[in-house]
Amino acid sequence: MKHVYTIDDLRDRSLPENAKLAVLGYPVAHSASPEMHQAALDALGLDVTYIRLEIEPGSVAESFSLMQKLGFIGCNVTIPHKLEAMECCDTLSDSVRLLGVANTIHFHEGKIMGDNSDGPGLVKALEEDLKLRVKGARVLVLGAGGGAGKAIATQLNSEGCARLYLSNRTVSKAELLVEKFIENTASDQTRLKALGNSVSDLKMIADDVDIIINATSQGMKPEDELPFPVESITSKHKVYDAIYSPPCTKLLESASDRGAAISNGLSMLVHQGAISFEIWTGVAPDTKLMREAIS
Image (cartoon, rainbow, N blue to C red; front, side):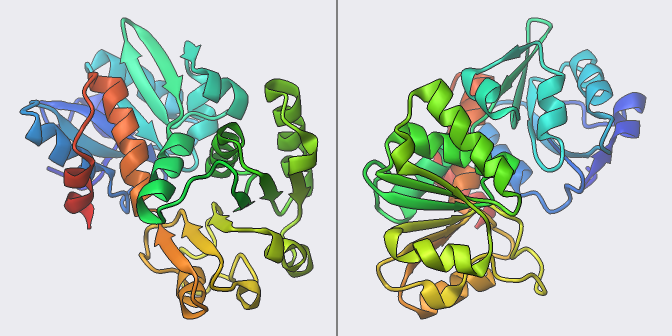
């Protein structure tokens, strides 16, 4: 079996016979989703193979059509396809309508159904790894304007944070999200604040934050700048980085050196994957087994 398949493999039907689930991305070779989901599928005795599909932007609609013809059950969608995937769907969950992006696709009765499991997966990860409840906490989301960041921020808002700071390089995107929360969820605007990602902006609110969540891609490469001024991190903070490769980013390493509790995105990957798995199969998988498969 190949490590990565392409749209040409879909066109030529050059896939494992029982390939019925996949992760779509560009690039996608780094994804740990196949190992994680395959462990859960095998444990349940399901004759299904989960593969990686590297699909270029602009080709998601054709890929979905080909996958339906090949009898796929569904797929996960990662960067940069979450918006394009949503636009291909026949039906959307409430969370996708609010977010404008989809990360879980279910092919069911001839329909393409879109959902998003990023937000719920993050909350479960915080509870498991950092032993905390979001309700009543003061939280900062870095990169709130991106696909995963929007999903995380939306879920955190619905969980009842005492204060929710949404930081983004383009401040207008964070401001638009705040407006949506107020309009669609009757949120108290006094507990919501949009801000930029400058050092001065982030230092200004650091003392008023319990939880710092990095939903940007800063930290995936060794040369990346830190997404938060680490000199403002103290032992009272809990820092979660949605990146899981590398397992300890410079942000997490620096935060740990300053006494903060830390965790990476592996647990979010597992929990959002488990939610997707249940959407496809109707069965809740063993998350411990899924995590062991990629640890």
